[in-house]
Length: 301
Ligand SMILES: [Zn+2]
Image (cartoon, rainbow, N blue to C red; front, side):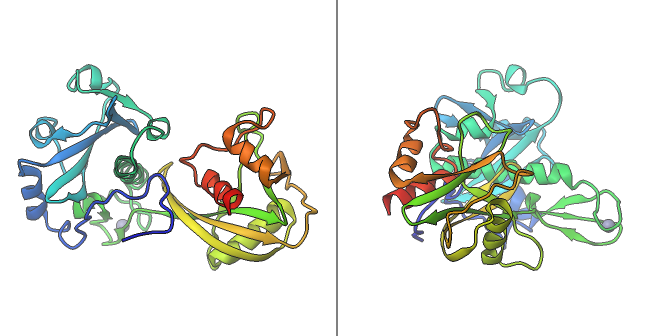
């Protein structure tokens, strides 16, 4: 399949084998396959080497005492099964059982040097384990849940409710007026960083309505037209960023000071300089962020 634009954290290329991963015997056979590999996570970090995300061979994974709760099946790469395992404990496994195999790195900085395939696999694993950590008890009745479908579902044995991994939609939009675009900044961000406005989609609301509402709330601007650009799974911990470029009918922007420190208009050439980090100490998020790609698409459009 060809998509118009692929953001970082998308594009693993794995066959998730969704129809087969609910079969424990099939999953057990995949884990025993000689070409099976696994990513390793600990405290949300990925085991990695200078070459990228480390993949342990199946025999090494089995030696780590993999079980239903700490192992997820990510999919098939060709015919090779790809798993992820999360290790517990306070001691860094890279200094004990995994000594010599790499170091544990946070995914966000690590992703800056990963090809899309590796970043996407790692994102899926990180989001799944994070979801598991936050959903050990049934949201319906409060009893402990257990894993199913090779990590892609949790089931409550007390009330029978099935729980699925969350992906929370967030709209992110570049507001444009003539030859200028609007960016905002939050007080907690690094000094000088400007980015596109964004917000969570609310129940009973379309993506387009969410874009229009967030623009009104955060900048007091009204959208007159909008077009979809691309989407991005964001594994911190599990959002789906949906990117738009929105034309607005005025340049009278007012920042919502409860959420933003300021909003600011940038001309096309200023925005291009911002992406390069050449605008008087101001800069945009890095290319792995969809905000960067929205600004780039507009400056090059
Ligand atoms: Zn329950």
